Amino acid sequence: MDYNEFELCLPPIAPVLLESMRAIGYSFEAALADIIDNSISAGAKEIQVNFMPYGTPYVVVLDNGSGIPPEGVVHAMRHGSRDPRLKRSNRDLGRFGLGLKTASLSQARCLTLATVQNGIMSARRWDLNLVEQRNDWILTGLREEELDALPHIADLRQMTHGTIVVWQDFDRLTAAESSIETALGERMDRAREHLALVFHRFLEGVPGSEPVSISINNNPVTALDPFLTKHKATQALPEESFSIDGQTIKVAPFILPHISKLSPESLRIAGGEEGLRRNQGFYIYRNRRLINWGSWFRLLRQEEITKLARVRVDIPNNFDHEWTLDIKKSVAFPPEAVRSALKVIVERITEGSRRVYTFRGRRSNLDNIVHSWDRKIARGGVAYTINREHPLICALESVIAEEHLSLFHKLLQTLEQNFPFDALYADMASELRPDPLENVEKRDEDLFDLALRILDAIGKDKEGAAQFLQGLNLIEPFNKYPNETRKLIEKLDYVYRERTAN
Image (cartoon, rainbow, N blue to C red; front, side, top):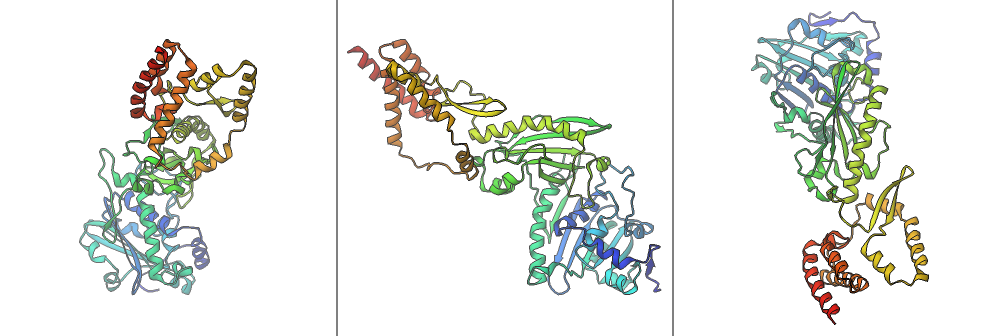
């Protein structure tokens, strides 16, 4: 055995087992996020991701964390180096002691770890080609010339503490791509968006904690806030917390603005028009790191009408076993006790999303508006009925002959019973709206004619006419055009006084 090789005392099935573990299902961006987890757990405040798709392609993650002492490097490169049941530091983002190895080797055949602590550098390498050749768990050290050949090793040498992870020999990236250059470039584009979302709370920083800086080829990664907390139309509902088995879980609901109030950039951050619906639901954070999102955990169906509801859920890292957190830290499912507590919360907040989506941001406290339609909860469902108290309905009833009133009421019932729910749902899902370039002059004429006909039905009841005109700005459809309605009231008052005086 060469002086720089270390044979780990493990069963002699290394090639088979390592190749099997490569198929664990990591995406490129999830694997990269797993490496950054280690950097943040080590207290790094600056993390540089660098890649080179040409020549001898590589991906490097360099951080200024605490580094690893020489005696701990072999342990760090050992598979399953940590018991997932043990209690860990509050800032620890790992669990199984597999992330560095399984994530890296899922993307590349050669993984090199070099680290500095107190000015002392140590390095080890997994090379699957060597493992296959020797048919054994061969973890190698690096000679000085091999260290010098590592990309960006000069940056690490300038540090008193820090770590560099190097991926080389990519054998899977070109499976569906024409070249390694194209494949690596596209993976990095996706990784940028993924890291911006998964680590957005670290990138933004919190009171009492310095923000973490992440860059890709010296281009900073900007936090991508899925709740649009800085948007003035976002509704942040009261945060709640509850305890399960002595562990505190915090829940913070948000209702996003209606799509009509989102700028192109805000819509992009929210996931685009398709992403709004797909990304609704719970956002599970473990030590501020996003691990799972876009699911209601079967507590609610993903619907178009609830797509504005997103719920931030913070869980501690010593609750992993209860949430069935997987190795990739990309799947988590809440235990039954947590589901029961979340169910109560989700029913309340999704109603807020329905209200915002249905009324496009209209304030919910405008209960004094005289609507044309009433929305009612009936027999566990929702029914829309024509408002029988609307002045137009009352006016019609006053001028329709007694023998025809029952037919008029049958007409109203027929319209209600055949409300086009399916068509409305489809149109809302497609964000279809009337052409905003309407004929203003024709609209004003129609409003005047409608109000005048109601006044005609009121007749010479001056008190009733005065009440109607006084409340006209609160009656649909007049309430939608407040400026025009103010002018309309003056004109109607003059016309009405002229008519009743004769």
